[in-house]
Amino acid sequence: MSADNWGMCPRCFIKAKAVKEKEKAELDSIYGKVTSERYLRALSAFDKKYPDSLVLIDGTFREDYEIGIDRDGEFYINYRAKCSICNFSFEYKFQQHVYKGEGS
Image 1 (spheres, helix red, strand yellow):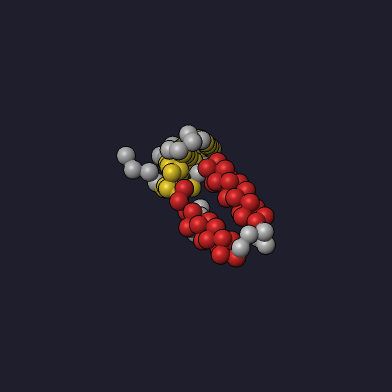
Image 2 (cartoon, one colour; image 1 turned 90 degrees about the vertical axis):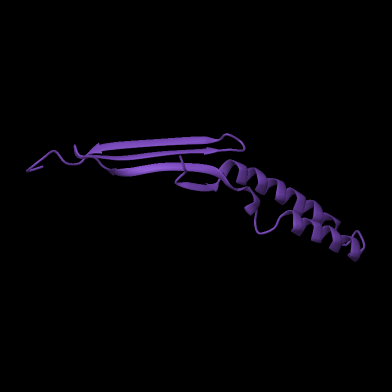
């Protein structure tokens, strides 16, 4: 069964973002304290490690969902998601009877 969407896990993203920000702060702290060549090498290594805003963790969050109204007039939303890396998961279900027949 294929997923409706493969996205980015919010837990993994927040964790990776914090690690990236910590490493960037460490990099910024050596500016002016080391040679420019050493700083530029460290900056280049940082840019290679974190290309394009953490897209490396995208595609690990499986989302399956359905939405509609069944034959009995019941409106429904079913949503499930789970990360293949950290196992974060979320589920949401909603139902409401919206049509009961003529005159409703």
